[in-house]
Image (tube, rainbow, N blue to C red):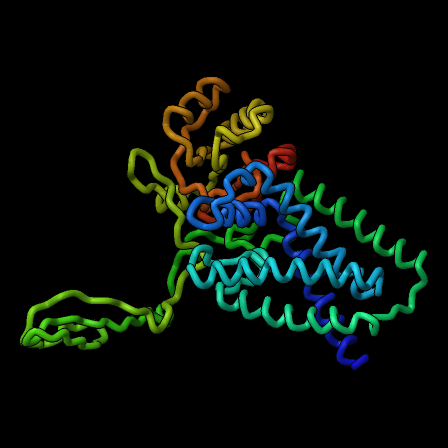
Length: 365
């Protein structure tokens, strides 16, 4: 039993540290995922929305610490109790998402590893079983470290996690797993390979034949049935290829200008997913850097999901030398974890991407 407990301990501890660190690398992104869970129609916990970022930071640091505490055997009973409560909550959450198809990606491993709702639920069930074993056999959780050493390791882990969280919150994620990372070409990210798998559907056609309902299943063709058509239901039996970037548009007056703008040899994007929540103190510096970019031959555009009245107000108030285009809010949140943030592109390829705290790093050549 001791060896089984040791194996369970290693698996659970390492997984919690990896999962926590990946989300700690991008706590803003995890907070967006929590907002999905808190939204009406999912858990309907709207009162928690303003605290999503704080909850995100607390949860991911706790995840890392519990993984470390389990591996070094620090306060085993408290650690295992905490792990059990956390995994019960996560298992409920992933089951709810999978069964009711509310949130299509749990965000368990951030953008690094995408899991379907049922894959997330299965992963949590396996972890639940392992943690229950640890809970029942916690007496076998030993440690080669003394109490002082264990406290020091936990303290250092907490300090490192807090410093890392502070850094990525005030800059950008240290590791970028999204399709808009530096070096990525947006047009290539939207393309579909010729040999990509296509979606396959079954169509269940319902007819009234002689007063009885008859169902005919086809792969799409309308069946030759001598009866009154009632309706049809579709079921996806094979998913088609979905490109990494599938919801990117740059709209002006209802027209998508993305194709032409992504051909610009020198393009600067000022991205603010919601101008009402944007950091206004930085817009004077935004004006300085964008004026410099324009002087150096760059085309500068703003991208926001805010209404035209708001964008015009911002342009006038800060005397910005560029127009705002409309882009979906979720897409903008994915592109850069900063409100505002700035990207520099060459024919659709992202050359630079900075947080508003790092505008001085921009180079316009």
